[in-house]
Length: 131
Image (cartoon, rainbow, N blue to C red; front, top):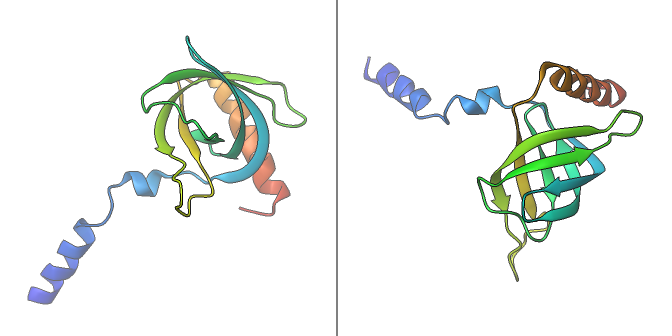
């Protein structure tokens, strides 16, 4: 009896449920313009999901920064979407950190933008043979 209690305790200490909600991310190399009131950053998207993008940059913006993202997947009309910096991967000198940048979560996606985004991501998944 004690063992099953331990097993359930171990399961409950698993990562929070947002781990299960994580959407598939796809590696891409697309140009993106990131605009805030004070900053214009021309950078690259290195992966995308229905929830957000990873922007490769040596100077990630502070967490919580709201920005306007402008990018055009090949073969699609450009997107102009609002986002917020959710996390950073700072460049660390003399450390093995080959992928500096920032995770940007999409905000206030309209229905049309969301449907277009899902279509782009499904097309990527299909072309790469994923489910």
